[in-house]
Length: 276
Ligand SMILES: Cc1cc2nc3c(=O)[nH]c(=O)nc-3n(C[C@H](O)[C@H](O)[C@H](O)COP(=O)(O)OP(=O)(O)OC[C@H]3O[C@@H](n4cnc5c(N)ncnc54)[C@H](O)[C@@H]3O)c2cc1C
Image: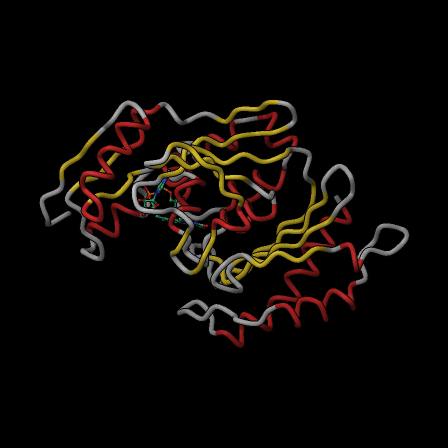
């Protein structure tokens, strides 16, 4: 139960959302699917006097244009799984969305953009957006701006969003194939580490490690690519070991454990990518 008085707002335009956020400052929070925010408020770990629900903006859609897709802020894991064109073009997104814990209830409420905005280091969506080189469409007091995933994730629970700003959607190119690997301690738990390896249509490969550091760690694979297109796995291990410099440490796994699992996760994701 939320024990502090909280006023619910359901604005109809981005400008109205912006005006509410400007008026109430830190006393207000944007409400996406509420799957994380409301339990936090129920437990008394966060309290806000104003909740600004984005549901009135009609931002549920997944849209496609000129080879690109946009997940609107309200698009849930289930919306992703229901979009045949999206999951045919970027099967990794379906793999990730189908595998989140919490079952259908969670998939029907929780949004990928909400997960990106919360930026829990253990969440899966931030690393996926980083692998897809997504661009976030951000609305704020100065109008709209775009923020690349490379700049969006700043630290644990910290993004590039400034006061009064919120995300309208995330855009990325389609045609990405690859491998997705996740390590959990228990089936119903959060990932201790994830690895995404993918190539675009031009064959350029990237590897992104999630939950290994506070923000997703992206490594380019060109230097490891052999003439026949396969990846030098011994070189990969060295690259990953050298790149993980500030491993994340929490109750799911300490820094040493996360450093140890990074290279095996990376290798498995690459093997999946090569078999895809
Ligand atoms: C039971 C359970 C199991 C879960 N399992 C997994 C799992 O296996 N893997 C995984 O990665 N995650 C998991 N999650 C986390 C889940 O993915 C997130 O709770 C969800 O994606 C957050 O989205 P939301 O729309 O519900 O955000 P909300 O709870 O509404 O908001 C979360 C935060 O983001 C902010 N926010 C939301 N939308 C916006 C926006 N458009 N612009 C600016 N700020 C915004 C809110 O103000 C709040 O601070 C689980 C959660 C639960 C409750």
